[in-house]
Length: 269
Ligand SMILES: C[S@@+](CC[C@H](N)C(=O)[O-])C[C@H]1O[C@@H](n2cnc3c(N)ncnc32)[C@H](O)[C@@H]1O
Image (cartoon, rainbow, N blue to C red; front, side):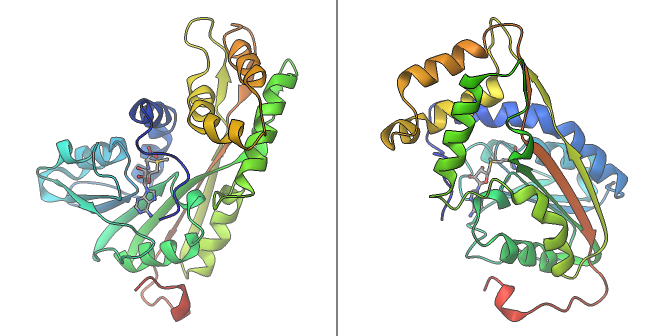
């Protein structure tokens, strides 16, 4: 297990719900376009609060099945019941069950040094003709802010520095299409979305601020930032005027052909 975010952080559920609010609509649109419908069997890997699991459950109905997989099933367990089941599992060391029409993972692979092997596991989890959908961030757009802000730039650069000493890959998004191709998938598609994130005088900018609050103890203890930097960052995102782009969300998908030829070392066993 190499996950760099602390699942026990006091506001982790709110942070994950904020991400779901930003990205669920896009995820649903992609899966609908791939044919997600009544009776499908789906697995969501690293399912978090289960927002995508709920979307899948609405679509597949009682004829289908949705499996939610996570190392931390706290937020998923209350959702269990037809058509949803929950599996507590570390996908870096355990293979997934098989026979699915759709395997999906969002904001997971970017955390895993064995991303390619987990994609391999997802490919094996779907039936021939089934779809694999992976969605991860790429920090290519993380410095885009108007008006230009030293406070924002300092914090983003400190995070990027922190990531170099962790398994987190801030450029994971751009790598997804080639990883899917190398895993033997066909009919590969890609969509990118950079969310406009405005400062709000009352609410601040929750997506950025909750991530930075989560990482703050490590950023401070490594000397990458000081408290004045963090205070300036929070002031900026309450100024009611600034606007930035979130990191680029890269969504990539591909279909399993009748036969998948992959090297054995890419497998999780
Ligand atoms: C950033 S959250 C994303 C949640 C959800 N996919 C979403 O997009 O809203 C990453 C999730 O992956 C889970 N996770 C991290 N490492 C994992 C692993 N090795 N196996 C299974 N789940 C893992 C975490 O517990 C967390 O719920």
